[in-house]
Length: 296
Image (cartoon, rainbow, N blue to C red; front, side, top):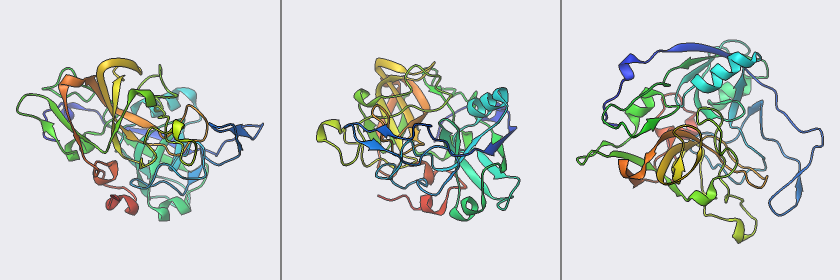
C-alpha cells in the first residue's frame, strides 16, 4: 500500500506461547440456528483445515480455528500475546517435531491463530512452544488521521494494494462487502482482542438465515458497513471497518466466520475497491502453499 506511516518507529517484541489443547463443553451438544443438535470440532489444538484462501464455511465444524491455536498459561502474558500479536507476524515453533518450522499469525480469536504449511502442522502438537515476532501495534498512517490501524504488521501494510488517492482518501481493496446486519458475537469487545463473528453464513440452512456470506474464505479482506472498531466494536452509521477473516464455520446461532479488525474510521475517509483477489494469503511471506494461489 502506497501510504506514509510510522513503521520505522515501531518496536519488535518476541512473545512466547504454546499450542493449546482443543476444548469442548462438558454437556457436549449445542444447537444450531434451526435448533438441530450438533457435536463438532472447532477451537484449540492443531487444525488441518482452513488455510488462507480456502473456504471459511462448509466445514463440519463449530468456531473453526485454522492451523495452530496459541496462547500462554500465564493470564497476563496471554493478554500481551492477544493484544500485541498482529496479522502477518512471523511465528516460529521452537520445540517439538516441527521445531524451526514457521507460520504466520492470521488473527485473534480465543487464541492467536497461526497458519502454516501442512508439513509444519502435521509435526506440531499440544504443548509445543512458539515465538511470535510481534510488530504492528502503534502503527499510524501519517496522512490519514481519521483512520485507526489495528492488529496489522507493517510488512502486510506495504504489500496491500491501494494507498492514498489523489483526493486524500485511503484506498483499500476488499473481497466482500458486509452489511451491518451481519455483526454478531464480539460487539462491545476490544478490537485488539479476539475477533467479531459474522452471522448469515449458515450454509445449508433456511434462506432467511442467509446474508450471502457463504462464499467467505479464510484471509478474505472484508468491509463491515456502519461499524466502528476504533475503541471497541459497535454499530455506528457512516463508519466502516476493514478486517480479515481469521476464523471459519460456526454452527451456533449469532456466530459465524470472524474478521480481525485492521482499519476503522468514517466511510468518507476511505475509497473501497471490490476485488475478489483481496485475501491475506497474497500479502504474507510465510503463508501455507494453499494461500499462494488464492482461489477465485
